[in-house]
Image (cartoon, rainbow, N blue to C red; front, side):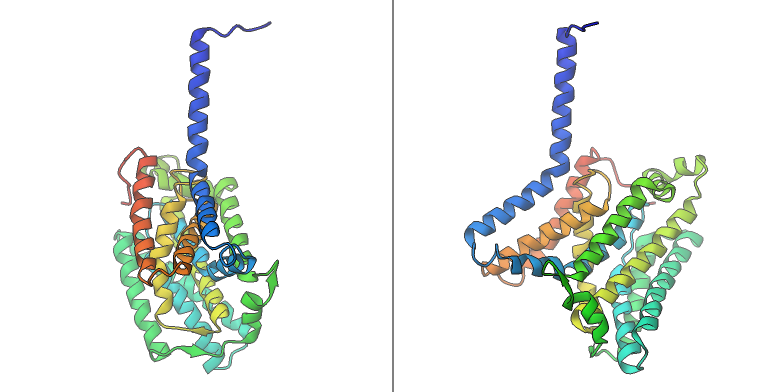
Length: 336
């Protein structure tokens, strides 16, 4: 039987097509802007900016920022903030340096202790947020500040260098396609988080809790347990970022890792506007990190002053949050 398109069905199909085009445009708009940036900077600096060495440096050097961004999107997905993530990263890198360099521990048990420290801090965040019903912003800010004090104490406020060359080799010296292995670790982690959120029951519960905690409770989801798991995973992944940081620099600085918190949040919110608009997602976060880094790298190579980095990250955070609200039709975020 053949169907005849009436004017009404034709109008309906046209609307669906326009909606589909608009939806696809929203999903890949940031990717398009990123490619446009590459084209612009490439046209201005074809020899330096478009070299594979330039791109491999960008990919490898920002792996730590990618990992930190992936860490904070898990609590964000459940409706919480983790402002202690950068402190956990710095603590992990400092523990690697102190235990390996000062105390002479072998690198493998050092890495285990560093990861365990991240889980412990994540558990502390979860305990105060969930047991005492304190807002995650306040708790994680306080815990992060406390951890900063511990870092200064165990390091005597000094940079510690001389981390095991075995770690350095497997983070930045060894390369694939000319790119440090740290980049591929971050890429594998993003794929695992994407798969977990999209195709596992635990990931779906996390998304459900973020959409509405009361509704999730009525559907039998253990909301507190899910939120606690997001803090634990955030601490674990942040600690992994600290290990990468120590391996990339061969040292640990008590303060420099803290500067990654604002760029990570800017990338997380910007990532929520791409691929899966309105939702924090792993690959969107990766794209956002490298979009921001491409802009900063290009401007720096053109001779821009150092303050352009703060302007770029700060402006990107405000714009990203505004765009994510537009995607949500300006509905207020519920982080209660």
